[in-house]
Length: 117
Image 1 (cartoon, rainbow, N blue to C red):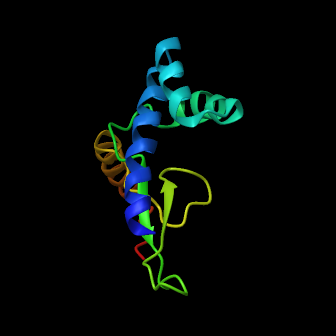
Image 2 (tube, rainbow, N blue to C red):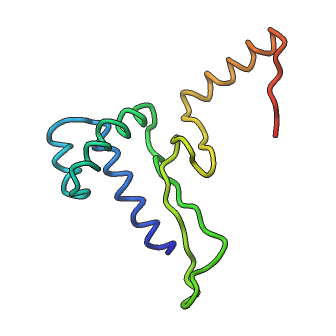
């Protein structure tokens, strides 16, 4: 449900913050929340380095169009941003946004125009 997804989002943000630090202490703190060794390993080897440039906002909550049958509760999905196969593309972090605008200027000088949706 949506309230549970919003609560899980806080835990996921905290665990990613620990994975970005990468110390033994932060690994043990993340281990308190996750408790599965393969998941903690993936967190520190894949997800931590992936979000090294982001200062927050590692997850998003997407509300589903249909409510749950039975009690009509609003349903939602929690997903990490900047991952392959994500449902909706994330906005780049602020530091990368300036780089993207600079790349657009360079490409326009060469004659390549950006495709707008």
